[in-house]
Length: 83
Image (cartoon, rainbow, N blue to C red):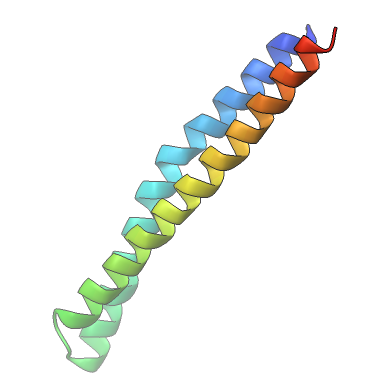
């Protein structure tokens, strides 16, 4: 397999995890908040707080992944221009 193909597959793999982590972090935040609301009787406040924290964590991860992929893409373009 050529180096170009490996880089493409690596980038596609990283992109596929972006959507999954956004959804998973939101769902985890919701369920933590829902559990704590049931335990402490604070419905719906902890659910909302942890849901928002999960969404924020998902978007931060989205930003970090996008930044990392942009850096990788820039490095690969830089490497091809040097030849």
